[in-house]
Amino acid sequence: MNYIGIDIGSTASKVTVFDDSGIKFNLLMPTGWNSVETSKKIESDLIKNGINLEHSKIVATGYGRVSVPYADKTITEITCHAKGAYYLVKKDLTVIDIGGQDTKIITVENGNVTNFTMNDKCAAGTGRFIELMANTLNLTIKELVELALNGEDIKINSMCTVFAESEVISLIANGTKREDIARGILNSIINRVKAMLMKHGVLGTVYLTGGLCELNPFVNLLSQQLGQEVKTSPMARFAGSIGGALLAKNI
Image (cartoon, rainbow, N blue to C red; front, side, top):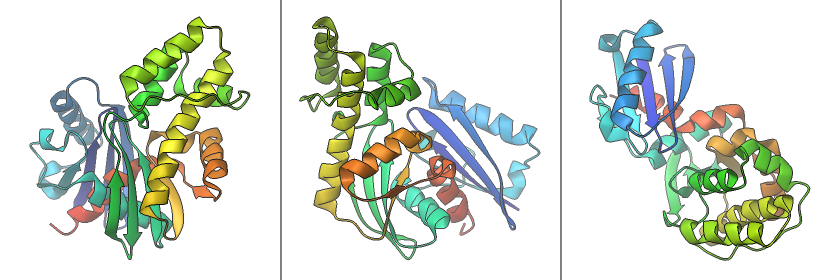
């Protein structure tokens, strides 16, 4: 029997396949404009990888979880991220998940969610925000993060992505250095995460999930600004799909 977690996010989709011995493999792909088509591609890729869906239990989660007709169950991303992060860390923790559409802070005790906080979808503190700002500066997200290390902080005041983008365009027009703008963009995100975390509270290990987990300069900057170590790993990107696969075992 295979146990499969499918996490269709607004930007990227992640898939984790477990069997009784542990994780068999992960898949990562852009979600694109149509999560229904992404779901079909995932189904095709699973079959190409030798997975018999009739002998599998499947949980779908994330932004596009309702677009997976072959899933046995849909579960919220908060529950799945908590379960997956706990599997990776194996102790109580506070999860920071910077997703494409929102940012979540989740307290996990003994593998269960005991508290969570989410930001406003319009707030300039999400993965989509940093992607848009990188495009405005004609950079990749990785390039923006690396450039920011050489910049001085400038403040981006707007809480709305649209207005924040206008601020950045004005800064460019006024001749502000790109590295300073890049630093301001990252600090805009980090300051919003910090405010959420101060309100939410911290328990145990602070652990970053989401697409930014593989960018060490961002993780280091986040740790500096929060005043405590933020841990993560490349597998943290799959926290939602790992949690979904683990929960599929209960179906």
